Image (cartoon, rainbow, N blue to C red):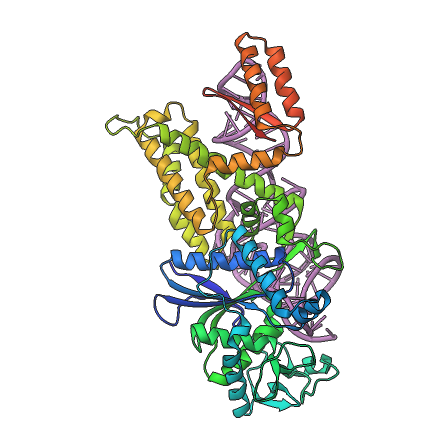
Length: 493
RNA sequence: GGCCCCGUCGCCAAGUGGUAAGGCAGAGGUCUGCAAAACCUCCAUCACCAGUUCAAAUCUGGUCGGGGCCUCCA
């Protein structure tokens, strides 16, 4: 059982061997805090949340760093538009980011540094690059000289000459080579600025990640993650900076997640198909969003649509209903210790074996470049096995059935937990989902309970016409009544 | 123009050389006063063409279609 990961740097799936046995250093590019996060940010952060959780589950001591970019052109622009300071703006959206991630059920990284808190460290690396002749000052700006770094473009595998042909020098920039990028930007009037050997200014976008990663993870570390769009130029430039300054391999494994499209189109503000996490969570349970994202491989593009979210909701509901049923049974049925069980039939043996092997199969899937879709498939199979056990007549009198059921329940919840799923009490989750769904039907749980009681009397009197009328009436409003030996419950269609 | 990715059942989606996981939807059945849920059974030869191979959804070449990056972007 060895973990294999797809490494953008080599273009291959490779066996994961950390630099130090048992320990993993992992850095993921966070957000630039000038607006609310959208579904794409949700995906990136959920994906790496899973990487973090699974590595720890696999026994690694993981140091996970995710930064906040809190100094940037967009922040300055937006702050000016609103007439507040950059700091006020960035703090507002750092809070919003934290709230969104908490709502999505993400684990907190080990460290969440802000770029503005590492200005001296940033300056030290810039100076070091200047001293080594890999960067140059030009009227208060400092640029990285990409010609001095032979490995430039090794991550994105682009061709320098062709890139150069397409590159432009923006007005006001004093680059020697159009491909050079800013490490330090001279302050214009009204912009946030820090004193520096090159005059007042602020760091460029890329250098902050080099500075914060070395601070927490050292000059060389295991995993660097981010969205595919960050490969060039951001991650390429981080490599140039860090390897240029420290002269050793920056990152061993580069992991990049795919995009979220909306109704088959790229999400963008101009297309008007831009969904923030907040908008989505008004409509969908956070766990449904997570389930949707994990039901595809992290490197594939996924399509955000109501249909797909509804499918995810249906799938997650299947899990919770089974988990609830198993909990209900196990809570009220003590597992007999001495009652002999019937001979186990072949098909039952198959179910038991499947549950027995669940964890191995789950890990096998996750070890293959975090194949969450396959892992979830295995969990579904375990759930079918559990439902099958619970569907057997008098299974609750069979110790073996109960033991396997309990084993299945424990494993599904444990492994689901590695994916950040099934973290709610099943009954509570189902009740909450139902009440939310009820909101626009004009019904209330109390009203439904009243009708159920009335129907119960009708059925008792064998007035099935009235009983069916009540059920049809509720069905028309999307509420299904479920009769069972324990009484009648309801659920949404 | 350069670089890169993708095209698997009605929908979503695993699978990258050994003969197609899983979910949703659909059909039949068991159960039920009737239902629902659950369970059982059924439901694809992998865009197309030509190759390589004992063997290809999986490799190679080509065609068609879709998408991304090359400017800020998860």
